[in-house]
Amino acid sequence: MKHTYQITGMTCSSCETKVKSALQMIENVTEVVVTKADNSATITMNKHIPLSDLQQALDPKYTISAIQFNETEELAKSWFETYKPILLIFFYISLVVVLVQINSERFNIMMAMQYFMAGFFLVFSFFKFLNLKGFAESYVMYDVFAKRIPIWAYLYAFIEVSLGMAYLINFNPLVTNIFTFTVMSLSIIGVLQSVFNKRKIQCACLGAVFNLPMSTITIIEDALMIVMSGYIIINIF
Image 1 (cartoon, rainbow, N blue to C red):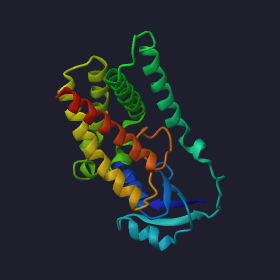
Image 2 (image 1 turned 120 degrees about the vertical axis):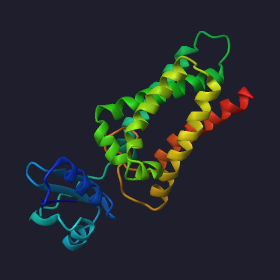
Image 3 (image 1 turned 45 degrees about the vertical axis):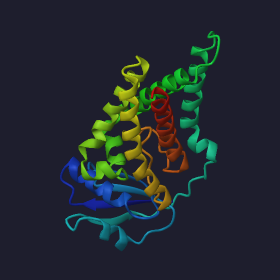
Image 4 (image 1 turned 180 degrees about the vertical axis):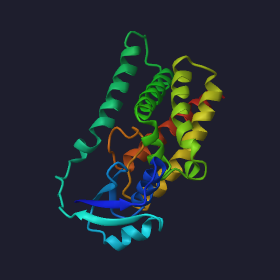
């Protein structure tokens, strides 16, 4: 269901971000769209949330009031429809990895993982850069490191594209994989906390372009990079 509210007290884009972040932290809230231009906030929720609870989540200088109470029950999407973007991405990357080695005498698992990781980081960073600010706002909601150092949310997109290029050109495999293992191990902590606590928040893996919910799929993404980088490190030694 969707409810539209009026928000007073917002004076800049920073206020817009603060209000959105505060509302997204509320249990059963799945999506929040805040617009300073018309002082509105459209909140998608699993069940009705009292206005008093919304107000309590906000800084006292902001006031929220109902201006529209038309509930819109959205048609439930199937699992495939929800995760179709990310499934297609994994399919295309896997297809490219297979085609790269199709003329080889034998399938090289190390090379396959290297190219898969290159495609993973390059594609996922691309979607983050389409709306870097939107990605950062979503990422800081659950990443343990970004919560303490918000600039990390912006740096993360640059780290991903750098790792993608490093894998593509086979730059110092040991250093590249150790760095990947470390970064993804830090990243998965916040993901695990959010999924196990059943927080209904947007996954930032594809930036702010697609509205993907945080779920086991997100855990698999990070875990896959951890396992692959760990496997390569072990084989290098």
